[in-house]
Length: 429
Image 1 (cartoon, rainbow, N blue to C red):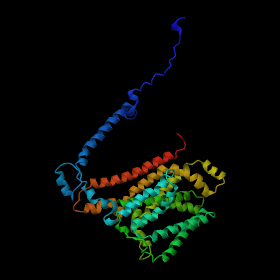
Image 2 (image 1 turned 45 degrees about the vertical axis):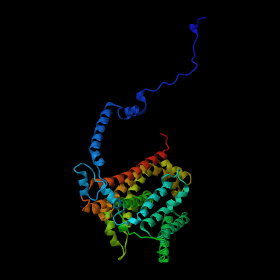
Image 3 (image 1 turned 180 degrees about the vertical axis):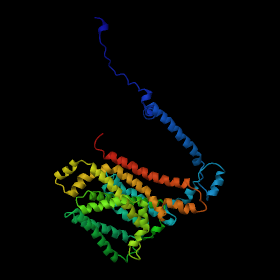
Image 4 (image 1 turned 135 degrees about the vertical axis):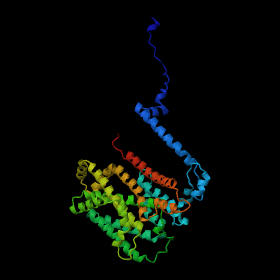
């Protein structure tokens, strides 16, 4: 028998051959993303040329920057004709850019601590799956703690405010079986009655655990922008949900009140509302009544943002198929239960991009308060800093620093929203 007819079977597998160089690593990424076609390759080269040109032109301005100088004239003497930034204005006036020029420097730790606690307080809300449920207690207490830290005064004021909210929530839960609308009104009235009664009782306790008080007019800098952004976004979301539901209500009076409010607010520029908060609103108050300017601005900005968020959420409600409403009805749920358990969770998930867009725009619009003599970070730059003889003429460094702070904040909000959308994705695409 000839050995040529015997079949041969390999007993060991050959080692895998390495993939081609063009199919691995950075070369693969460049080929697929930047040079996938001739037009894309041309655009990549042109874009790289533009970026390099800008970077090479801006590099001396950054690397030759002066960080230690008492004034702009001294900074220019140090540069001696070279191109360079005068970053010394940031090291000299950083406290005014962040806290304003009247907030006591010895008390900077208080708004700083409130800012740090903000991240701890919102973590259970933003990352509910990854944080202990016990931190929700701090989330509920944070607004009262932050008020006490920033404004100071006796701890009795935030404690009474907290007890009033708890009493109103208790009344709301007890009357929830009657009607959702009646329960909300009853809870608000109960809280206001509690505050009125407690205010008369605790009037003599102003010295109990008191921090040094700081008036609102002494606050400024980026702290004002953060305060307005956080407070107004937090308040406008629940108000926006109520307005969206009210606009779709079957009760004509409720519906047309919500429609009129939304359309009026959306048809008026924010700067007009700020002027109303600054000037006109005082005419509607009793003579001798003082109404804090920051509180007036918070009310107007919250109204403005609530109208836009209401339209965003209304779009999410309209995007849901009719079958979701019918499914809630088939389960025997009433209106409040169906909205809480079935409809609103889906509508809010659809509305996340629009809500984040409103929140980012609102945070940037807080710089408009500078036109009503509130010294936020833009007001500080345009007012006390540029008006001083030492730094008159410094623009790029100051406004660039403000732009960097806003970019970091807005970019963080945007990235969180994209992460949240991925977490809530359910269609497995």
